[in-house]
Structure formats: structure tokens, C-alpha cells
Length: 125
Image (cartoon, rainbow, N blue to C red; front, side, top):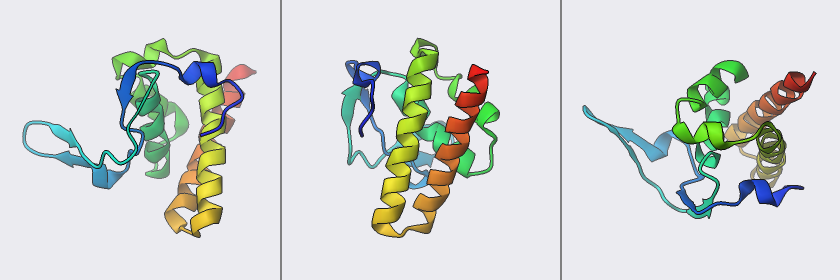
């Protein structure tokens, strides 16, 4: 994933990064995160930011998705600039994947990422 400010992604937290509905299994007591195909180390807020795009794709507006992400304690460690940069990076990532795979879900996620990035830009005004 390319970003103009890679330092905002730096960290030593184990990240899943491949959030999608098939990778979150819920039983009576808890949720289980499976499908660890792309583990990496980075800033702790990145995983909540990754699933934020999926929440928007599922119908949440960007403000509601950010409020849900903010329930993760690590969310508060992200600066506004880091979130702005990451949202733009998500647009590039999902758009590239959509073109590469001709996958309708990737197109939906690219649209969700654009909605989030637009929301982040509106917060700057």
C-alpha cells in the first residue's frame, strides 16, 4: 500500500489488514478474527480504519463508521493527518484492486473508500 506519508503507518502492533465479513466469525460469547493472509506490523489504529471502509460499503455513513471505529481504544492514537492520508490510500488500493480483478465488491469498496476520503476532506473545511 503506497502513501505519501509512510511514517504515519509505522508501529509495532500486529495487524490483520484483511477485514471482510468472511474473516469475522461470531459465536455466543465473542468474535473471532480468522483468515490471516496479510498480517503485518504497523500503527494500532490501522485495523479499525480498514474495517471502516467495509462498514461504509455495508450502508453506514462515514460519520457513523468513524464512530464505530472510535470504539477501538487505538483509534485515538491516529492523528487527523494520518486518517486523511490513510483514507486516500484506501481509495487508491480499492480502485486498483477493482480494475485489476473486475470484482463488483471491490468496486463497491472503492466507492466506500471515496466516500470516506470525501468525508475526511469535508472535515478539513
